[in-house]
Image 1 (cartoon, rainbow over the protein chains, first blue to last red):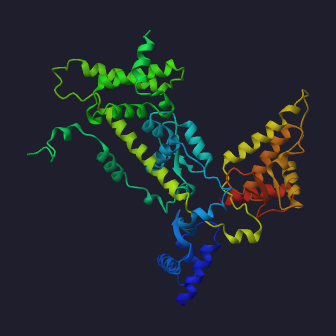
Image 2 (spheres, each protein chain N blue to C red):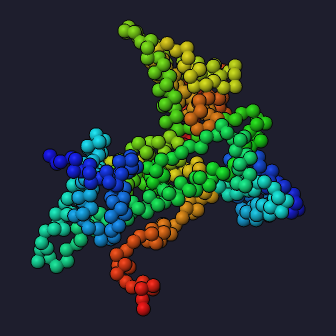
Image 3 (tube, rainbow over the protein chains, first blue to last red):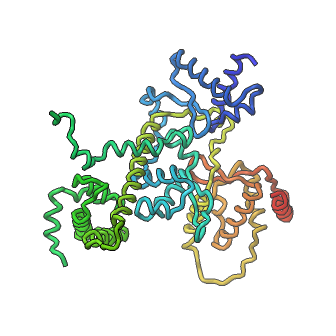
Length: 194
Length: 268
């Protein structure tokens, strides 16, 4: 297949898909296209858009490719989307989502153990918002339900996949940096040293 | 019990009252106290933090705020740790564990996810500036409600609304209802024959009795399962709509449907 037509076909498919379209699916639909070639094609398309000064790009989100308007033009575009009200999440919801995202599949009891408060309301709310879903039951006493995050979760936070979340070790480092330590205070710092 | 004015005096200094609602549990309050007192989280001065913690709990009571059970439980835990901390060490036990250990672990664990929650919040704000164009294909087909990821919650809450609307018309009369699921299935299929879709409330609009509504709901579930109808909505929380499914046929009798059901069970 010619390079030009491959670019156009992939462009058409991503543009027409109502949901983010996975590289695997593109490869199934276009002959001679492999998932990795699909990724390269997308990168090539994005280069062209950039060179031409286009206001849109293709990005990977929730495991598929999707067109979006670059944030630079958000100010102009948002008028059109005025009716689209983004849902706001409370801190309790965000913390609970973080626990579920990193620990999935996870039971309500495990969430409650980490946060130290009852999780019923928050979990119910997140289920209703479709940011989490029931994944199964834990093989422990009472076989409690286990929860996991959804594609809707990835879309809401603009993540290509769960791998896009910052690593737990990075978060630990971040905390350690901000943590005042009594041990370090006892040591001589550079400016007091003779 | 305790002199409450004393409590007020000591706390109002920090102008803490505004922040009360911000605490999302005992661990959150403890982290706040540790930060405020500028103490090392790995070497918590347990007596001082416990006193501070108890003062806040009292304040919450003074302000008539409902103190959740978790806060009280944590108070008990703190007092227990404090008691063990103050007790003279058992000479026979050379390697006694630090009674604070478990609490510190829990605090650190919670702190990580609190931070992760903050990061998620920032990501959501960034994502708000990424606008995704609506797919032109949906427009061509004139059917915008491709959103078919409907959960049991959506169904039950839609049905709850329907039932609540019928509540007032109840009167005491014991009748034998001869309504069957099959009849209601046929009713739903007929309702869809003349139009593209029926909204959820429309299906229940002409039903005077709750029992008939319940049977209709069960019939709807059966039809969805047999893929003779499809439920969809334009976006999350929008009104549910019932469409003809891939196996839709208004003429087929209910008996036929049961055989479909059996086929399903064989193939599954």
